[in-house]
Length: 403
Ligand code: ADP
Image (cartoon, rainbow, N blue to C red; front, side, top):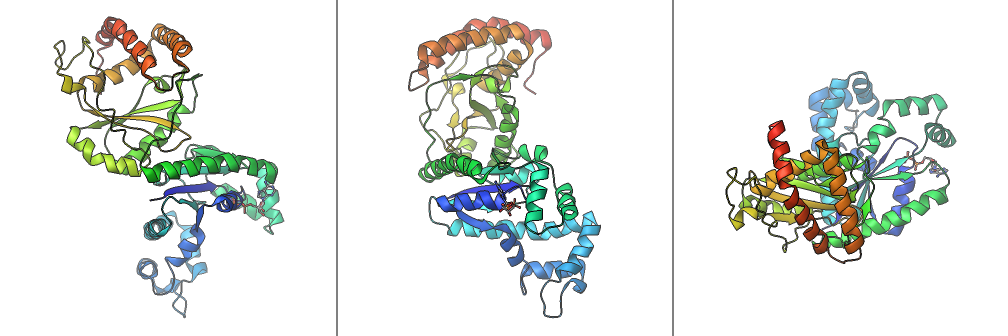
């Protein structure tokens, strides 16, 4: 039981520097360059697979990989490069998983990965840290390390840029200034990682304060996308929607990402529970149902619902750095549809947003100091009940459906 963390960034950005700072605090570091060499070492199944795909011309007389020969093939041909990655990446992942399993319980296992380029690859980690520095600074540093400036430029140009990389990263370390500036960021980052690992080991959620409204953060949708990719990595390709206020552009909200994972039934939620917990989204067993409403849009249109229709499973976050409410709701159950409809109503209606915001601001004043969220939840229920007719009229007018 440990958490896995990727440190990524362009060449010369400072991955090794940040990784070393985390190692100093106690992280278990896995060197991906070393893994990449190991899985194609002499006599390995990886090397045999490469020989089969690329021919014996890529094997030296002593039976080891002839790297320059292989490089000449794959650099010239993207299809060959993909084939090579198809052989090596799964082996590296398996080796990494083994090293993670061997790490002491509660560890933070850090993997320095220059070539993290897809959302799926990022989702395999509990957290992804990006390290960035302006290009001219990186080139200067690489030249200081003995690389020719033209080489440094060419290597940077061959990698994804920082904007694309930021979309994959949960945390961004700015290493564009002094080592002290970077060290200053690594300390709070380590306390987040250590807290995450401790919570994960215990299978518990991070502690949360009372509701505090913050202005709309344009990063919320990207954060939600990363979290959804992790949920998919954990349970497979089931429907997950970003719901709640953070899914409504422009709306101030608590900094809590609400996600709704659609399940076929509550038995499926039981199957998912340990998978989600292992992925850093522990179940909160005390939250087993939504508040039943007497809303117009009930199961069969306008009929009463059974209290069991409001049952759900609820998961939260072990990561102290990002609060998440993950609701597992049964497809077509009343609150499953209702959550989607409420979000879409707020997205489409500026008046709805300002009324809802007024309620939030008012309840924050009253309940902001509460340890729990019950006072807030009650006030919200009241607002929802009062808005029901309006939402229903809107849904009818646009022919709304949950998709
Ligand atoms: P990466 O692992 O991302 O390629 P490194 O951590 O090796 O990058 O950093 C590249 C070079 O820049 C190294 O020589 C390193 O010592 C130097 N370096 C890293 N961070 C800083 C910094 N904040 N200030 C000055 N030099 C740095």
